[in-house]
View 1 (cartoon, rainbow, N blue to C red):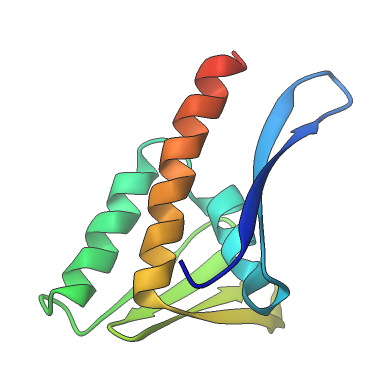
View 2 (spheres, rainbow, N blue to C red; view 1 turned 30 degrees about the vertical axis):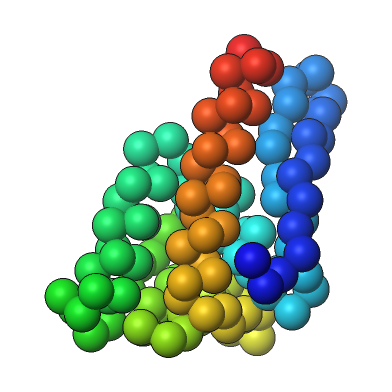
Length: 115
């Protein structure tokens, strides 16, 4: 993996815990996308869409979630904040795919341990 990252547990006022992924500042919207727009079953949905672009089945895929607008192309993906056009990150699509896989694996483990 090209970028640095780490997982952190954040405790809320009510005592519940949330998982966040911290990433390089140059791709900070990746963290926002993972946290706000990818929950549970949507991991596979996102991976399927990325794979369709990477294997040439689709030239481009756009996804809109709770916070982010994601434009996937074979080489690069742009993640934009829906509420602030000036907030965006660009990442290699293969690297984004790796982050989605890591997020899916870690969220399963985390929430199983913290139920």
